[in-house]
Length: 148
Image 1 (tube, rainbow, N blue to C red):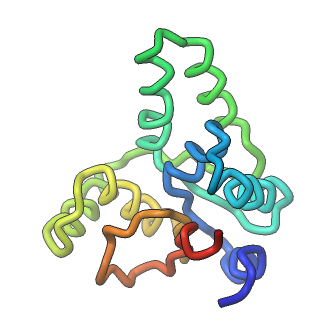
Image 2: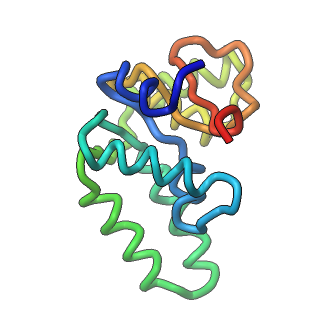
């Protein structure tokens, strides 16, 4: 299977699912160390990463529910200025690709947008912990649960 770092280095561009950031921000007891290792690899330019603007929306919803605009602002600033990370806008091409993924695989809209963004941005690997993407082979997947 190889180490996570070895896998990341094999890909010029990787995509990060929202869960990687959630595990990092919340210091998840099971996944924080691995998420931190992946984000460090991105910051050290061991690979380039992309995320969807949808990830920003998903990440700031929790703090906004708690009336923590300050935390939401910090998350946004971090994503905008994180080294070697591109926050990809949701374009018409991404939406059209996401619609195809929904039709072909039955994905929900958020998953379809994240996967379409990854593909449209040239990623060859997506880092996730999602187990609901069976049959999808357009990208290699690194599932965090397989490495803890």
